[in-house]
Amino acid sequence: MGVSRLERISTYPGRSWRLFRQLGLLAWLVPLAVSLHGCAVNPVTGERELALIPESMEIALGEENYLPGRQLQGGDYVVHPEVVEYVREIGQRLAAVSDRKLPYEFTVLNNSEVNAWMMPGGKMAVNRGLLLKLNSEAELAAVMGHEIVHAAAKHMVRQIQKGFLVQGAVIAASLAIEAITDKEWVKGIGVIGLRATGMLVSAKFSRDDEAEADHYGMIYLSRAGYDPKAAIAVQEMLLKESGGGNDLLTRLLSDHPVSVDRVAAAKAYAPRLPTGEWGRKHYRQRLAALFRDAPAYEAYDKARKAYKNGDHGTARALVDKAIRIQPKEAVFHLLRGEIYEHTYDEPGALREYELAARLDPGYYQPHLKLGLLLDSLGRQHQARMALQNSVRLMKTAAALRRLGRYALDEGDLERAKGYFKQALESDSEDGHAAYAELLRIDLPNNAGDYLDASLSINDEGGLRISVRNNTPFPVGNIVVEMRSFQGTTRRIFPGMLRANSTGWVDFRGSVTRQQIDNSSIRVVSARLVR
Image (cartoon, rainbow, N blue to C red; front, side):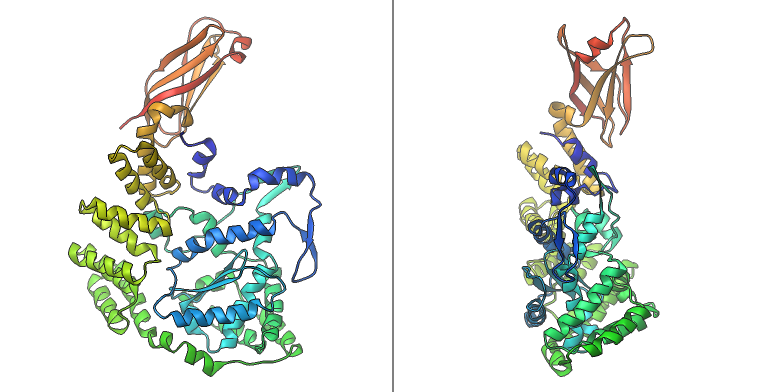
């Protein structure tokens, strides 16, 4: 079958239908909206509030987007597993005192930005860069406790519910989503599902939500045995940095803006809570390996910036320095491979991509880079394996389009169409190319899934056949099938239809409205115009 109308709409920029499909809202919100009295007690605040999204769906939403969110933010930090284990220990210590029991998960992302985020259902990530910015276990616990409150108090669910206008029937409102990683890179590589995942990773909470997270986060800190004044230390640090133009703090400050009022509120409330430990020495001991590697990541960040600016010599020297300090970090070798490839050293690039994939098999970028390079060298069998590995971790138009092409070469049209349909969800060069590949093989037999036909009466009282091309490509050789009381006839629709355009043809004679109403028409065949 071809692409349905709903799926076609979802490929256009600015639409957020993927999130609605994930939530299943189009299927169940309409009958639910008829009885808008569904309320529940918030487990953190004790207040009654509207509850449109059940907990099972909230958890499922977080689970579905947790891996893509981590992949888009640099992948999991794997060089020192003991660092991740330490963060998980703190997270579970806080989760144990939360007012809401969820399947909490905690991980560390291989990202230098000073940030942390929580998805619905208790799926949290802490950036490597944040760990290096803090000075104690209690400060890290303050950040994590704040994020746990966002999940426990259903703040993200509240944001999603605000995305729907419920008034008798349900109208899905468009959701504004900020890019969560390098915009040019994401568009070029064609990451699938960026909109839904991006909304969850870059959530912007209301001032009331932030105030609740501050308040109850300090309570969680105290319950878990930490000094609640650590939350003040974190906010004071962020407030100080907010005026310093620190690029690494931009996203955290954007998603969770600090203010003098928030700091004052924390200072007023913290003395009312039982005090506890800070764990400064323990923090440095448990994260000693990460702090030792800090110069390597500083060199890498500078190398990536130099590479982006076209200074390949400086980038190469800096990434070599990073690898000398920490040779087991996959992203260092990934960048060195990109530099090799850009300077036409394919063997060197292959070597670095393969090493990066071995060092971090759970990160999609090394597999994708390796697969694309192997594809360009004509080594399709090896390319297919690498691209399949990348797609299992993160669907990208670049990988899906090539996998579709391999299936097409083997004569497996259905599998090829499946890959192309997934790829066309991306607004990227590969996404558009995949759409063209799909139309090339699907239009001859399933043109009605892409072109609409209708019957009407023209100004002279004769029959008018109109055809709408819903694709972003010109289409020709259009054949329509009309069924009426006189039987079934096929006609060739003359000429070519431009992308997203409508054409019509008029016939002499007279026709009645009853005859139009008792007839039907559809496009049965067409071809992509090269």
